[in-house]
Length: 176
Image 1 (cartoon, one colour):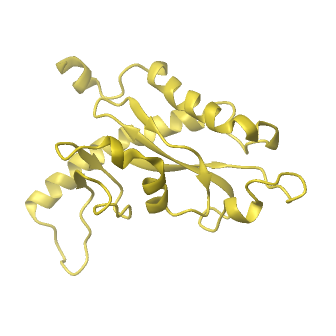
Image 2: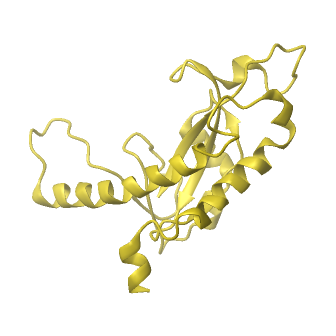
């Protein structure tokens, strides 16, 4: 599963902090200065990929391109994404996403089954991301004083989640 997440960043004037500027990190969707990262999670619930942190104004698709994850994927792999995360032509593998209800009024049985399967795994992704955001540094606005090392701190927080709760997907852990 590949998912983009946000972290609130302190606003800064250009005289306080030259890179990036507040306008670059401002997310109109969140109405706040944010940093965005892409997190990849294995089927058993462990975080296996963390991108760099990007400006909150950057699109999810652009983060996917810049993160380098496409170079790590092979045609025999598959990724699962949110329904608005349109990276099919960027990923060299199969891309699974929840089915869109557009002109049809009812999903087919196969679409319902696939959507339910995706939803069950998405719960684990959300739990994982919550674990990162509950870290003392990321449960509030990120202070400017740590901006020089924020990417390293974010990576450590992400990978520490793998050790906090044991396997998130218990059924997978018991089969292996």
